[in-house]
Each structure stands twice: as structure tokens, then as C-alpha cells.
Image 1: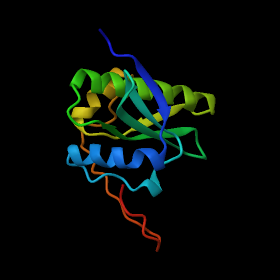
Image 2: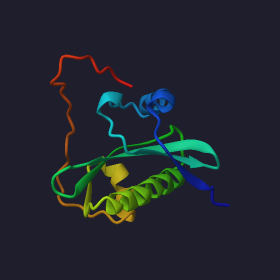
Image 3: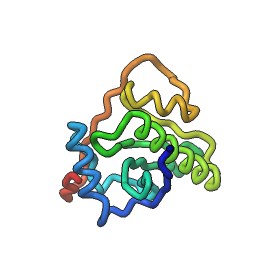
Length: 143
């Protein structure tokens, strides 16, 4: 039987420790809460939090960026894929309702499989390296 997938909005105060644990489980350093956009979702499978995804929305050209796909450690590939597709389908609707016409995602090749099944197409065979640098004086810390 398929699990019931539901969405809720990401709540930094409640969810940051959970996301940090998931990042640790995947040997991923995580992203500081200070740089996460307001539009983030957590997917639940039968009431259990299993995945999260955020959408950065450019304010000048109608393009949004889906970023930081993450799933609970130990999740089956089938459930991870279904959960991330569920998240992006919701974020597509949100982006469209705000006048956005395109969503771009940069992700690791193994995670690109779910994005392809959600309608994304590759623009290059090259692998991107995502790097961060803080340009402010305040310490943002990590999740």
C-alpha cells in the first residue's frame, strides 16, 4: 500500500534540528538556516517527516530555484523519490501562482533521477559544484 503523502511548511524553530540530523545521516554539511528561503516544505509519509525542499524565488525575471533536497536517512529510494516529487509538484503550483515560469534545480546525479521524473531536463553533462561564502559579519552558524 502506498503511504499517504502530505505537506507542511518548513518551520525553522521546529525543523532545523531534524534537517541537521538528516544532513548528518547523508554526510552532508547542511545549509545555515539564515540562508534558507521562506518557502520550504516538509513532506510527511503517513504522518512521519521524510523529506524537505526549498524554493528561492528571483525577484526580477520569473525564475525560481529549487534547492537543498533532503530526505530522512535510511529512507527507501522509492519513498524518497515519491516524497521529493510530491514536494516539487507543490512548489511548481506555488511558483506558477506567483507568476513564475521556470524552476531550476542543481543536484547530485543520484538525486537528479527524481527531478527528471518530476519533469526537469538536463541542461549539461557537466557536474556542478555548489560552494558557499558568507559576505556578512554576523555568524550564521549551521543547522
